[in-house]
Image 1 (tube, rainbow, N blue to C red):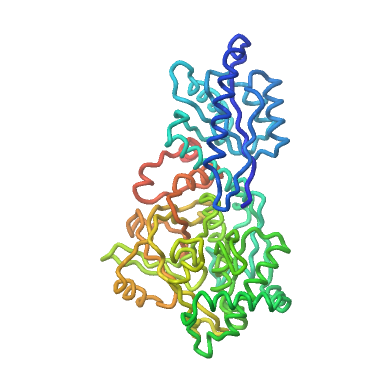
Image 2: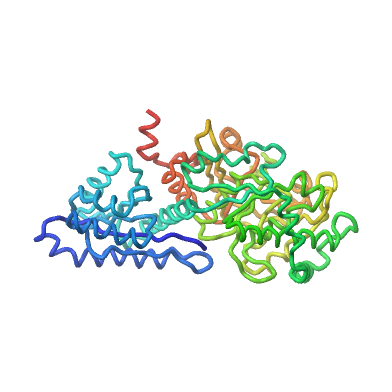
Length: 500
């Protein structure tokens, strides 16, 4: 998975009689933090960002410039500034001006009375903030698991932003059916995330499908046949071997165009051109978001159905803060007040991973059935994929815009396992041939309804609320956290001052 280098430096005292005594211990602390980060910031695929350690503690203007230039040459895109003792605050400027002003900054200190790193942190970080630099602060002992977890969450957030800043979203066909919440809002997205978009007509996918290697299509078809057997419910009309192969061709074509155009993630309009004249996009979208296909393990590539661009951007953010997990795209379909459960389902791109939460497709596909596409909506045919999501702690979110200003609704929750008869009854009230997440969230129905920006909600396994909040704060996106976590959040100073 793509990542960007992390810089870590130690701020120190300018007085030679002080730094000559403490530099060795300070470098020991600095390298220990670097080792903690390397050990704990591994991605799902085993990759990890490079950690670049400043060659010496910052004790003078020339040293600050030298270390900053070292990090700049190493292409560092975020910096942790460590404080283990008192330091001279003005030295932050020759350092930051050398490494680069517009990068995420974390100020990290011990909480030690004898060597007051937190005093140096507040003096130095305060200098940055009074000049309008958004920073985060973490104070705690290095061997404290909670302190370590906060640092890793902040790095997940900064990595997500600094990676996405140089990414391109491929929008196949434009937002579907006039859903304006799915529009790619170019200016606020560029300002806050740096990500841009290229819109490609779906005709290019159709023409690329004609060039697809048929041996590859047959390989995919055999894979599905072996995994599902008689759970591919052919009906001789909407779902046939040929309509399923057409969906496989579309997946391969999307993969080819993504590679050719340099798209890091994408959205597929589908309705109505493809769904009425080519095929339903469910299976191609599922395969893009999956961590595997018939060729073995692969990195999930975010693909949003109906080319909902802000869904895709949200999914990409969730993918990075989770270390590369597949993400979910769901319709906000139906609330059951008697159970306090949402039934979130969509004909589109539920990754098959969430059927059993396994990296082995055989385990997930044991719980999956392919149904014929609904002719009423999807006249070109193909398969819809159906399962009930496995129980798991989840993070749900959605990026929205208020008067051209981006915000993100964030909530913790879970995918709930229900008795089979209850699941069957609930699913029958929407569409039993589609995938379902029976979700319970840390928010009331009224709170959710009051602020949620769209008919599409996105999710990822695990509790990533803090990391996602850090990401929003670094990017200048207002996070709206629902439920108890929202009540616990301390708004950063730039939000408080801006609201005055």
